Length: 120
Image: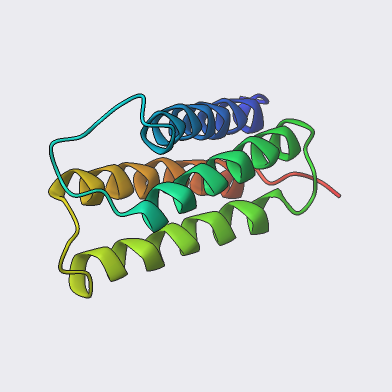
């Protein structure tokens, strides 16, 4: 079980790359959706996708602050999910489902890192 951080890093890389690809396709007009697109949310997702890739690298390299980085990303996603769920009237159900998916993945990443702490 010495590879927990690598599993967490792979999940972080996966969610980051997947988010960048999906968001970039929408931003570049290569993919159209049949529901309301919040441009700020797509931009947010792409930015967090790049941050997720950086986090994946740091988790893979066993950077001692990986748990804090994962916790920050998780917290930001939770805040955006709360905003989308309770304060945004134009948000599509698909956007909320995608944010729930991101929260669940980052929760699993954070738990994985927490259960197998990276030594300083």
